[in-house]
Image (cartoon, rainbow, N blue to C red):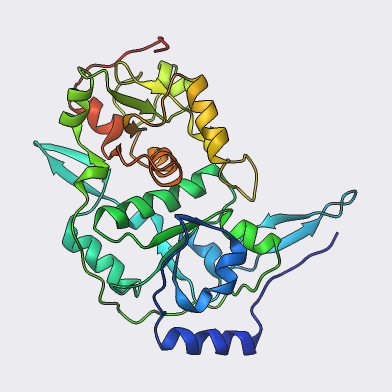
Length: 329
């Protein structure tokens, strides 16, 4: 067994710190999804936001081992981060909001609150932003896509997600560090709010009467059929007429978690009765998983008629709107 701990060399850390101290040079990102090789070549020109729930892992040593028979590297303990990255605690990027007298949880913050968050992460108005997750699970990637959606909603388009996340970075044995840095406050501000990528309950209710708008439930089949539910969702089942497209189909199953090829996603969607080119509203339980489907259909497949239902089944059930159980549609 070989134990490998990635830590940035002192000289490399000083070099990158100097680059960062001068401010990231804005460049136009090549696509909404970037690979680790590209990021390694452009580290000094982008702002890296590392989003994760396990915030202790940001400054914890990563442990990798080699499989006995194949010699392949495997991540035993995820940890560390890309030099210059700023930690984003996923649990702090969403909030509770009062909507029609109901407390709806896990929603996008108000403009002023999100602006303050972005500034606290050291983001500036013209920055090219790359979002990195741990990359060890499908859920990790949905944290990245959820943050991507929020940033884009508030008017910043020059953003991308790192395919494979930190897991891919570590397995390729690229420079990593456990030394955290305190970012200087940025001057980022909210731009033109992108209402065209967000749906509310009334938009979803209208879609029930419109055959040209697809509702896509991105949860597992058990949630969709109503075999079980999340504790914060008060009713089982799905929104009437919704097609199911389980979120786990969007990525590989094991670390490093990579997005499936766009052509494969399009083919799988077709097999499930989903036309990837139609106007669409994606939803899940709370708007996290559905952000990955929104990201794939909108950003990777280029359908600019896709919206995310932020409140998702949590809000829909709170409002006592209709649901369907034990039925495929």
